[in-house]
Length: 119
Image (cartoon, rainbow, N blue to C red; front, side):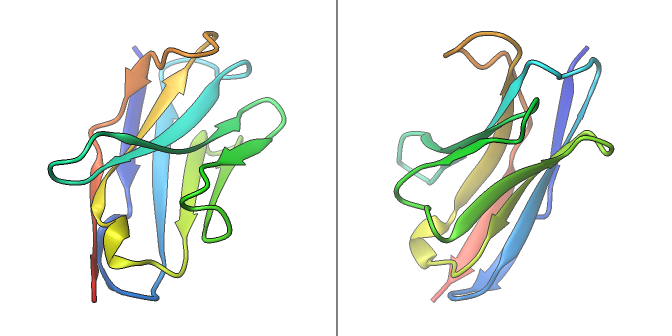
């Protein structure tokens, strides 16, 4: 059973930084892609970016490019979301998800972690 557990959320002032972690377990992920998503109150879920487990290549959404960085640590089976220069509009529940082989559909999701950025 695949499990994804996020951690690292919290309250931070605008301009600050946070690093979210997503610990993955339950199988090997050699051909998987991990994504980060966020959802603010009253808004639709937004794709933040993804990382390919095999080679570490990443893609970041335009809204976070240059401020957020996704990475992975194979030895720890963990994916990270480093968030710098945070803005109040970054406030949301952040979730990680994994697609095992599909190019589109994410198969498993974590429970999410709250990030609140105060002005």
